Image (cartoon, rainbow, N blue to C red; front, top):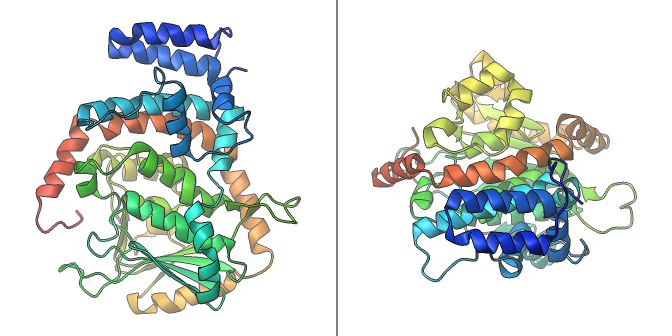
Length: 412
């Protein structure tokens, strides 16, 4: 079966892989053109081989590892003591492979739904969380209070800037909130900071951790793609579990509230686009400085125009416009603006309002209308490759290096 975008006639996979192997001594561009051709022609066959005819549901990192083992000419495996240039080349090749998988309506949908499964870590921690109602990880504190799961981002060392560790902790916490039947509503908020400039204040998020990026600790698969296909997608679509009433819905969904204190920059602003109710303190602001950072702001280029309109989306993404909570345009991104000392009460009101029985089916239908799975799939397919290229671009490295040299580091 070919992908929806391929017009090339089907050819034998082994022959095309042999051609790819023979071409590896030529230019990188020629080899990558051949890799694109192989994926355009054979994405479903390759994916079926890696997943035993789609009977297995590997997560994205497991899929890439399996592909590197089975098809090293297509997805080169990491080498020992891998230098940055080799890692960059390998991640771009991973982007080619994943774009091919995600462009396929068959393989791509299977991978996206597989990523909605709860993580093994969350399943292991679920009995303890159900008993205590509390989970403390390095990056996140999760606490259940009166049917509300309060997920507090608590990386005060970096103003809740995200890295691989935080993505893992966030997905674990989101899974637990969705899996716990005693939770009706989820709330995401930043914790209190110790940073000299923000000491004693809550901060939502400073976006991607540029120090981690400069140090090579931000990866395409474990951060940039896992983040979008993992916990953020679960906030929208729920968690995929086997249960008696799965005839009604394959996933467990719950409504989510976000509370923004101080600022939501970059990835923090991206998160706001998937919440059912967003509250902000009157002194807060949001920004999405993707063009300045040199990378693509996740799925925001798909969602922001729908939420805020095309012109404002370009001002924010391309121009780096900062929007303060009290500006009229902020109402396109924020549902409720209150005085800073009134955020707690606003969160409680919003959570209570979202407990109504009809909220979950209605949010599910709204999300289906606004972002059908195949629309999301087509976007993240191209994102997988383009973000891989941008992640290792020289201007991105220069920006991350300048940020890492700044002491103390503060958001722009």
